Image (tube, rainbow, N blue to C red; front, side, top):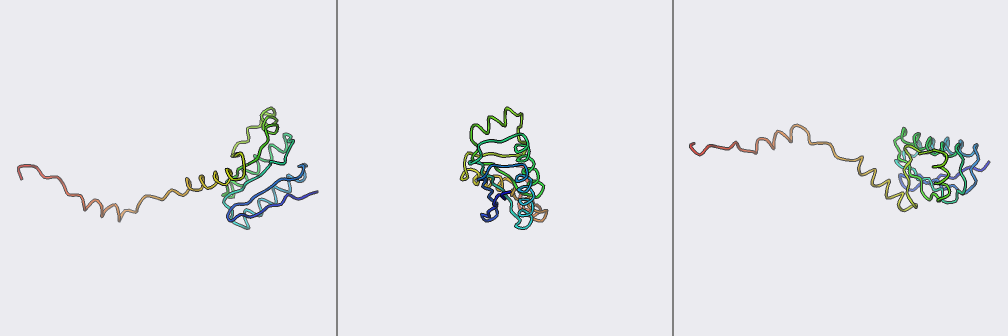
Length: 146
């Protein structure tokens, strides 16, 4: 059984599938990827399937499982390079792949991860001390007769 390599690009893991996926290799990929996310603290996973020509329902569901697993481990997943025939097959199989984000290519996939990370890092509101100080700076309006 061929293992799918998992490469590290900073805080993103890149999975480039270059072999025909068998059920065993997909299960091994799921396990390997979970370990790498935990070990590296990666916040994103890009799965490049541009070399994948055929998928079945098991492999399609595994993409959704991998995305869900990554999410539980605090990493977003983007699948890139999906061929039209693969997309058609997934739709015909009724697999909507919940939780799986897609992009046309690696560059757009990495940009999508950066965008999602920026959305997650919205700063919290200022603490009460700063809010109190700003309230004191505002003067109460006075009436014209005072």
